[in-house]
Amino acid sequence: MNFQENEKIFSSKVLLYLSRILILYTFSTIFKSFDHTFTTGLRMMDFRGQMFSLFYVIFGLIAWEGASWLARTIEKKTGQKNTPGRLVILCGSLVVYGLLVAVLFGCWYGATDILLFHRYEAWNSFLRFSYDLYFGIFMFYLLILAFNGIIYYYSEWKEYQLQTERLMRENIQARYDALRNQIDPHFFFNSLSVLTNLVYKSPDLSADYITQLAKTYRYILDKKFENLVQVQTELDFLDSYLFLIRIRHQQSIQFITDISEKVKIKGLIPPVTLQMLIENAIKHNRFSAQDPLLVTIKSEGDFLTVSNHIRLKANPEISSGIGLENIQKRYALISNTNIEICQTEEMFIVKLPIITAS
Image (cartoon, rainbow, N blue to C red; front, side):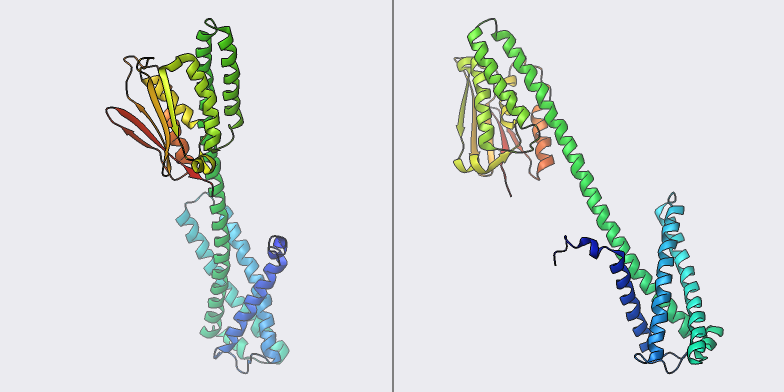
């Protein structure tokens, strides 16, 4: 039987009451197996014993419903109180209710034993408040209540866990979307600044620049709703971006890539990560045709390593502050791995964890 296809059956009230009847009947059988001094001749399988079980089940179902109603009512009435106060009121009310249940069952069972079997032992025990009768019934009431409470609070706990996990995922996704949305205006306005300078120098190059700019920005839009992209896909985007860089800086910036085919195909990284690291290196370092800035991207074990020589500008470009911090936060939100940053006097190195599809 497929559980998902029959979920309504398993969660139906019919199954709920059938399970309660089975539990109550089992408790009645256990109850009869004790040596009861309040009544004699009560055997498990004779007619009188089965009538006792029937009364026990019927009364138990009524008491069970009453306890559930009482618990729901108290939960509603004490919703504004603190948790310890609510528990004290709830437990106290259910204990008092249990004592009342024990007294009522003793009365009902004693009366029906007289009417049906002309036996007075149970009634006499009820009148003299027999310990065996009241304590036995009360203890079985508490067992039923405890069983019901365990099932109820376990289901509530599972629902709380699912709700918490759902809210956590929504929160993480919202924070990740906010980080990705930072990239769009940041990249676009920088590109427009380059185009403004280029359009007066060479209309033909400006046309090529606009074409490649459209490709790169299309990539950002297409990958806007993706948390991870294939390394090869990111490298293809990087080619278009590097075309824009070379138009502006000619031979002043050089790039070397050394990435294994396995990493290109199976490796995953957040989109636009490599572009942001290269842009970060360009912002903070000086370079010229005679002394170009070298940026290296290579795969090393489980990392993509992006490195460049440090030649800090005397007056570096004003940074928006979303580069490395953005990358760090995106990795923190989508995986348990963090980027590694290593800076020496000569080199600035960032190691990006390569995420593999599970």
